[in-house]
Image: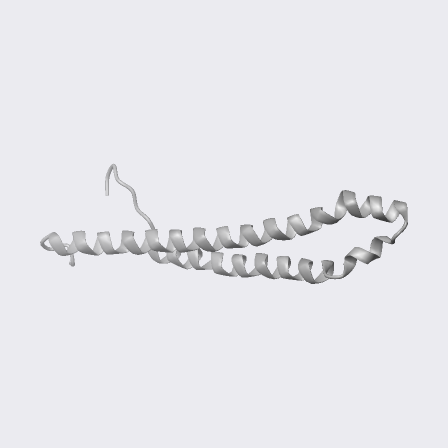
Length: 105
């Protein structure tokens, strides 16, 4: 095809599915971090230094877990969007081929 574009729809659809695994991995990492943080608040101690450290840093790890979880969700959504795009591209290509006489040859 001159002046156009081409896409390997099957390969693209396969790669889009890889986002599911990336999403699951990100969620698993966030879950593991949550488990590690569960009950860790007492690890800093109850003295002034421990309380100061906890106040300054404890929320950062929970925030990181939330951001990793959000990344997992975004990766899943991106994969679904890519997959949908390749499905639409495949359908459009098949529909165009059906409308062109002799295109199946």
